[in-house]
Length: 327
Image (tube, rainbow, N blue to C red; front, top):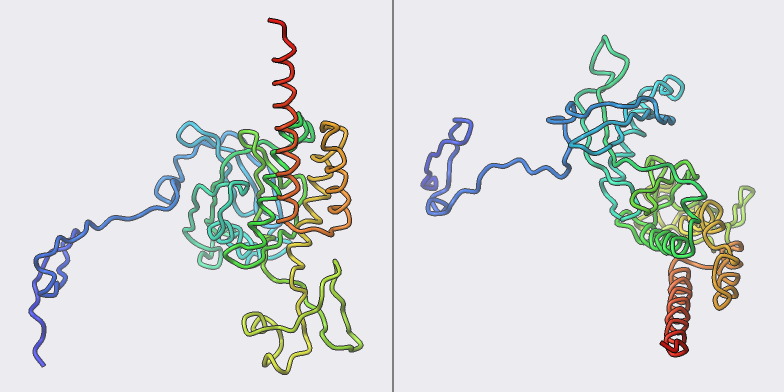
């Protein structure tokens, strides 16, 4: 068999590469490096650090810097890794980056870039790996920020409900934030931003689908369901048919509602902070949230109804005032 007619071309680095004959008349695309993020190893050293040790966790410590005139947060490996181990610290740090890279929502803090040059195991002189991530800068949220006025309360509540819906149907499956607390909530341009993604996971809680000594029921009135072809692979079962382990489908979504209610909804949806026309609706929603007998779709529907009722009431009041104004 004859070899195809080839044409030699010089690449941008001077190396030769062969082009098939049928490509001769085609214009070759320019060889470009496409960057997903504005910050990478190429320019991360241009960040000017202005504050150090502004926050820390099980794997990360945070500094604040300036990049292109804007404040950014620089996260590096924390000294606390001596407690959990270097490998575990690296794993959680990289999980934080990869998890944020795979999901996208307007209430998740924006990842601006990262740089990995080496891990600690690859250098005999340094304990720390050269691993850095850069995020948008946000102010630590306070109750005053969350509850400044009725419109802000309702807007924040609708944003969180929308985030709950996104996590329920995320590209990675139903995601659960495992460590939501007020310290993990920031504010940027009067919009809530959630940080720290190394606690996120898509594993629904396990249960026993037959009565055994280790029988476990599902919380939130969920039913223990048999594993399927997709999720049995992360269990200890050898096959779907021969598996006594079940899964509490819907647990992640319910757990998210539980956290969101305790940390945010209870403060945002104070009945006395809303007009009398929607107080009953607020109370009903609060009751459902406290008992966790609702879902993201229903929360959004109820909040939209409350929003529309307030809007129509306000519009009606304005029209009435115009009619009554003698001028």
